[in-house]
Length: 118
Ligand code: DGP
Image (cartoon, rainbow, N blue to C red; front, side, top):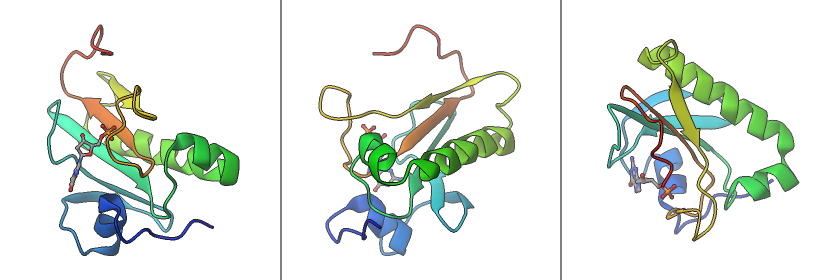
């Protein structure tokens, strides 16, 4: 199992040493509001264990990907955007726009998202 990384900001949020606005928590995942929201609803869902990106999760703990996506769907429901629609994004690697090397899913909604994939 991946260990928390002391120099990872999302590991710090999971550990509670870095403040965040949390919206959901399970034993394996944490959901919190993005510090720089790109939409009226912008929540990040992360595995509590440290995996650098979604590829690492798929390779090491594929069942965790299902839990992560289930939490994304639950966030959308709780935030009231499920009916109107929303975007789940898993930026991966430098050209994928991933700035934080701890696997995270963006849940974005509350405005029209179509045509804005980059
Ligand atoms: P990405 O580019 O896919 O790696 O997205 C990283 C996101 O993480 C970005 O939208 C901003 C957010 N973020 C970075 N640092 C923090 C932080 O300390 N707290 C919170 N809540 N979000 C952060």
